[in-house]
Figure 1 (cartoon, rainbow, N blue to C red):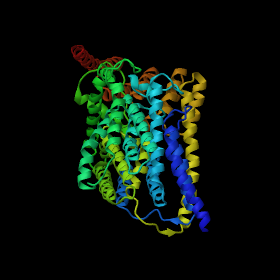
Figure 2 (figure 1 turned 30 degrees about the vertical axis):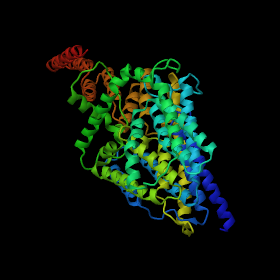
Figure 3 (figure 1 turned 90 degrees about the vertical axis):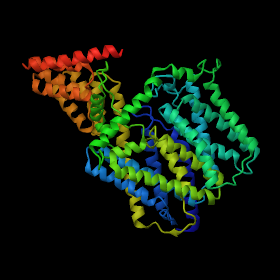
Length: 594
């Protein structure tokens, strides 16, 4: 390939990298079941593959130059692959592994972007403007101005403050990671007045949105910088100089943005302090307890599978089983005849330890420490120290946030992480070489797989959403189409079973519910099956399903009475009496609890 053609393709590579960073957080697919995450994943897969094709077309710098985290990244992939091989349950695990490979590929692609002379200033403005727009959209949503009718999965004012990321914690985390970049952009040496002023305004908007989301984990990550920055300055770069007047102005702007929501203020959209509103909310009184309960559930998983873990991407698949064991251990009765499965423990390292065992926890810890050490060394030598510091501190916030949340499950946050983290481990120098047949073949194969996978994924999620909000035969038709496109989706099989049951198609319902259990353990499915087998007169199987219901939710009195009724019908009156006695005891403890 001649030099002008190669230069042109590399220019398009740099443009593509910026396009991905600027657009991914805003992508949503309102007509699919997973409106806020699905579109972003498909978007990244499509443009990540296009980036790979651009690389394969040219003679270009090798993007596999060794760096400090190559071996740790390989260890993470190997640990997850091993745990999946030992505990393979569903093809959804392969899908999760494909997603992991996507972000590893994007990490190396952004390393290539920086080696091609990518501009830190342009990337910084791209991220800062994106974060400011997301924050302002969240503020507008709080005031009642929204483009979509959506909910953020929480039960207080934050349910509507989600921007295009789907959850207030997702929004709060993403914009918090951009705060150090915004501050570094405005405080860099020789920055013009307009740029300092614009960065300060963007910083005010970002902090205004963060305070509104009341995202505790991201805020703790920001506060952790108070310890990290002095230590890093002392050990790494003690000669960093800041324009003190502008730094003070930025602090005043950030404090005023926080104060607008947190201090008593009759003029904000809530008419009072958000701190007081949160304090009076029952969700905040129970939120930490629920998180601790999930951590204990995860610890039970780790105790039962101390070596190989439960298997990569099996957390949601088996969670409810271990939650039932935790309920039994905890013993406190409740008045809910249902339990809610959880797909992560709000603690990223603990999740890795539960899914991939000590090997996975070691690999993830090795990767984090290798990056932190390599990045600290790069802070001394980076050409653009202001961006190196912004990237370093932004990733630090994300790391701290991962101890109380799950940013690496989120496409926008993961993309931001790989873009910033890659800058600090990009080797100096360039070495040219032909991509060769292997890379070109891999690019073409990846492109074909992405096209097929993306189409089927979107089609399945679209039909699943339509089936959920339709009635009767129309719902069944949509759900059967969703099952065709994605036959390994628990929700599709569960909703089909419900629809078949409502139509009186008992055998079809049983088959759909049994298929659902292949992909995720479920209290609701066993409850439905107990009722279906009872109507068929198969009391032995109905009793077995009802016993499983109790195993998954052993602290609800009503389940014991339902089992007692079945045991009476089966002629097991002594055991039925014991179940009723257990229900009465739980009822008595429940009254004392209230």
